[in-house]
Amino acid sequence: MSVPTISLHDFDARRQDIINELMDASMNVGFFTLSNHGIPLEDVRSAFDLSRRFFALSPETKSKTPLNGKNAGWESQTQVRPSTGTADQKESLQLQFARMEGLWPANEDVPDFKVKAERFMNQVRDLSVKVMECLAEGLGLPLTTFTEGTVDPGLGDSQDVLRLLHYHSTEGKKFGPNFWRAGAHADFDVLTMLFQRDGEGGLEVCPGRKVVGDFGMGATWLPVEARLDRIVCNIGDQLMRWSDDRLKSTYHRVRLPEGGESSGPRYSIAFFNQARTNTIIQGPGKKYPPITGGDFIAEAMARNRMQSAEIARKAAMESAEKVASQVHFIPQHLQQAQAAQHAQTA
Ligand SMILES: O=C(O)CCC(=O)C(=O)O
Ligand SMILES: [Fe+2]
Image (cartoon, rainbow, N blue to C red):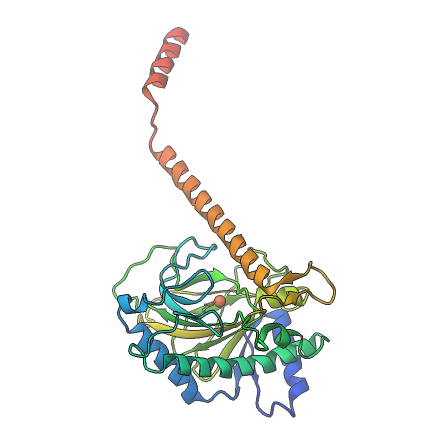
């Protein structure tokens, strides 16, 4: 199995073939890459340039727009994945179409940041609409099922997120065994579109999830090649649930550079198409109860927190057991009691 590449050239003439390829990839791997997707390379380069200029600012400047509880703003090394219990070795800036008051980087820090970022977000969103329409058609649903469910008609209830990512250089640094650029996780959204730069690899995917929300993972991880001219797409948990588990939301992770690989920084950009706050998510077969886009995100975050707490509890127990097995500490009163017992039985 591998992550297939699907070309969108001659989209209208080849639409049915493209739908078949998208469905095959989404039902079996949950990931595919798009080539000939129509977003000009200069625009992708400009988006990376914008990202690089923001991350090059001082931490004081970046922290003028801190990450809020609603997935907007800047954070650095705070995202702890439930699968690892360690923070991702990265910083990120999350941007949305709505609820961004006070969260756009200032013009004097990065000129025209908002205009440029919103332009790119619209380009990626327009391409996502094409792909989501194909997936709806492939599932035998009305063409607009996922797009009406995600694209804000003017109500300000979009939950889409553009995430700029900067994984720090690992030059001269040492990491423990459980550190990742991004620890294994599945995305919460409908459809993710991810941009990478040539040669800045490390993304790996683990197909095989049967049921949405399942934390179990297989042992086989497939690498995804990093190319500026391709967009990596994956199905998220919302679409897995919305398709009654027919389309797979697949675990993925970004590993640290290994061996002879470049230890330089890695930049990527992810666009998450998410159900609008009040959209009802429910599959045609009603495998799961209906849930709104807003509640879905809140529940997914709560489940992650519970899983993180469970990981932390297990780690604490393991280390306590390790300490107990190494240090045979017997409190004094027990020592006396034992000595007395020995004396009696001797
Ligand atoms: O940077 C990458 O390649 C993946 C990022 C990712 O999976 C995420 O932010 O959800
Ligand atoms: Fe992800």
